[in-house]
Image (cartoon, rainbow, N blue to C red; front, side):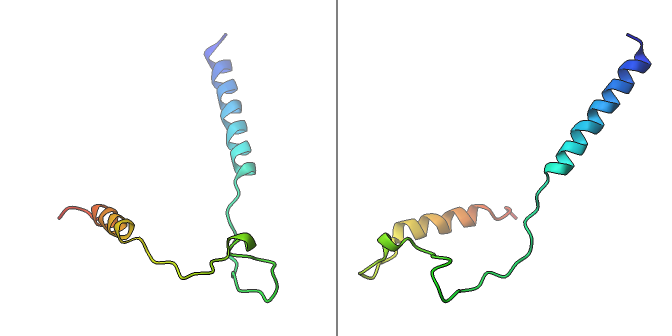
Amino acid sequence: MKLEIARGLFLVGALAVASLAVAAWEQPQMQVIGKSGNDAHCPMPRVAKATVATQPDHDLLLFMFGLSQRMRPQS
């Protein structure tokens, strides 16, 4: 196969992949999420409603704080 034909086929293949990627690209749209009066959006399942006050796990909070501190650049 000639080099020009191979280049042409490669270019056609690259354009096909790029056009498929553009067609499949889906960006989330900006929208306002508000609280509705009905049960259209339930933040917690109905069977998992908490009847007692929950307390935060201090070990988990300390772990998350340590992880957030490691994300800072060392300067």
